[in-house]
Image (tube, rainbow, N blue to C red; front, side):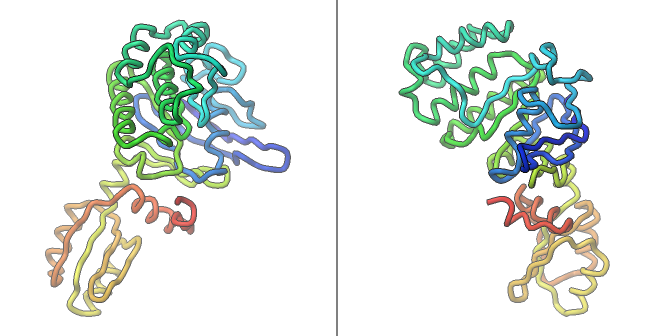
Length: 300
């Protein structure tokens, strides 16, 4: 488990990380959402000990990370623009990472290169952006670390490769308990893989929640009501988070269990109603609006 307590980091007069406290449970995918400049990359570098915090601390399995080789060896950090030797090949990168990660799996590395259609002897400088992203993920997986920190990892990958990488993460989680922490500015990229999601804005986490809990207790209801009195009944007796009207059709985001909500709507007997699944973006919009933030202005 990664524990972050009162973490702060500034660069001259710019506060990149502002008093973050969070827990990242092992064996789950933690998604970190935020716009460019929100502090995602700085946060990841603090997690793995690349940067030193001005105050606060990061613990990995109870050990402080910064300036601690044993704790730092549990992390592999895939930056937005991964470092590769200028004229190096994937084979050269494997040799490099073997010196830092004794558990680096050369056999698996070769197998994954072949599966992804990447030549071990080809110069990386001739690779496309997407191919470089694939190679960085393969390096991270084969390093055999407990935690894999990914900064905009899916950016530059086509839809097929995105699903292939997600499937690779899922397999590693099941087989050896890998914990991926994935930072992205795109909610839709993380919707089908993340179990816990945190929203980072101006260096601070607005909130971090279990995605399943949010989905179980937040529902979208579309209905056509007969009278204004029925509408007021809904607004008064249900925990309405958001409401949108288009003619006689109302769309509510309502907090509560599905069973209780269905029972209530059946008793209310509107002209028409249906419960619809919420996307991750709709959940975040609802949650942040309650807290006074407009996620539509924060997340593009």
